[in-house]
Length: 346
Length: 272
Image (cartoon, rainbow over all chains, first blue to last red; front, side, top):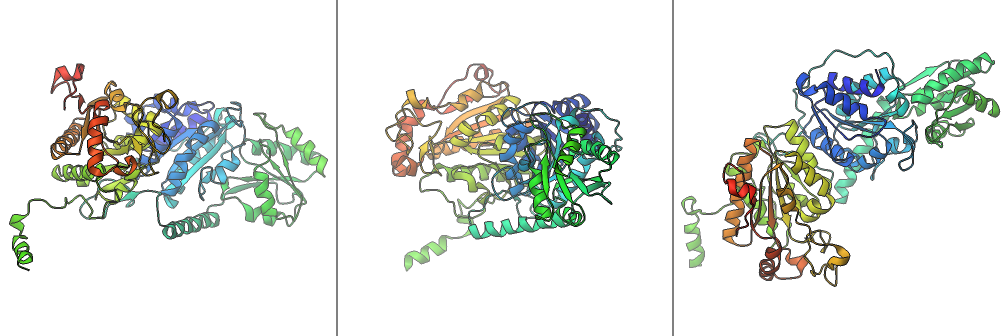
């Protein structure tokens, strides 16, 4: 099935309570699949087509504040529209899943796959100091698997999670194993708005504090939460890194390209490896720093003008050369181009 | 001294005729003297209390003067981004359909930045109550022109009066939503006299009861004053409101349930 369809089916099976979306290419199959699958009959899951991305993300806010497992999905221009809601959700410390099936930009850009929303996804995206937890699937299987993982992380840290996919993985068809149907949760978190019984204080979900000292305390709390996430939730995969002199750093579609590039390079006697970040926030900085002690060079391969490369450089801290290579505008890099680039820098 | 003693003798439970509603928190209201927000909060709290809905209610507070509304009513609250309250309320009601859900929004919030959310929530017939405070001005940010500012009316961003050729005409959102099939009950009220307070409270009570029927959106506009923004005394502002706001925003029901009054449903009749 398609990556987009896998997300939709996995959401139903993960026991999601609600999905609120708005059509945009190349991710409309998520909403279409959910409408066709009638999840309200299967699990009672609410699916609603909103009047805009802005409304959809605010519906997610409302649902999340009720303690429900809720999600939305969109693609780059739509994700920009959602940024207001996302920063409010981060500020109100609400859990939710936002799927971004990235297409090339800026502006309306193209409907072809790209990885040009890395900065927006990993550095906050909206206003204020905050981070999303960002997961980067590189297969249809991972698009399915990361739905449940996203909800787990979102509720564990009361933090929005973004699944940063791209148009290629969203549209491609692969074999996928889906988990059996999970029941929707009946437990209500104590921080959720459910109507105030006489036995407890009222719950107020807000991101407003007019007192700068209290607001600073809150910001410090967020920072310590992000530090805990950095400490505990880094996920990555290494391929042929044991003896690698040259390490590609790539996620999503670019990681798949690099898997092939490693084979081509090794056939030519070049010891290449791949570190594939699965979490983009938190970024596997520590591991990249370790690897820079024995590798000669790193190349960040991205379908962008060079965004993740900045995090690779910060991780390596000048110890070895770090380059960026990638195509833009919706063009997917070929393994041959990647190897040619590597050879040009050796 | 004899007077003080007299008052002490009167302060007995059996003589109590008016007291703080249980659903009000006791926090001092942050509004200017004479503002209609406080009265509207009070009657909303009274209805929630009298209908026994405190434990069943989830309110959505707006951005604007009533941004701190969640400080004043002792219920569960969600604070929305500017204009987005109907989107939050949509999800709350769909995920918790047995709860009583309402939004409380000003004119800038509901009729400018939140126009799309308002119209589409009403058009879908979301089973929520929307309370719309229309005082024709952005109060909290210091008296700027609102979508509902009257023609010729002065504000800090229309210092020579609203020029409708340049700035557009005031938007009658209540009239617009009354035309949508999704709305079940649409009314325009005020809270500037005891009689109007009673009528407005009755309207809120109706909306609360209608929500139990699950028939669509109930929309209550409260035409209100803004003594600070209008640069008038409270009394002057109420007189000005009667003379200028009410002709443009006439009080009365715009849409009532067909089963209660078939004529009114099809032929909206203004009353005062």
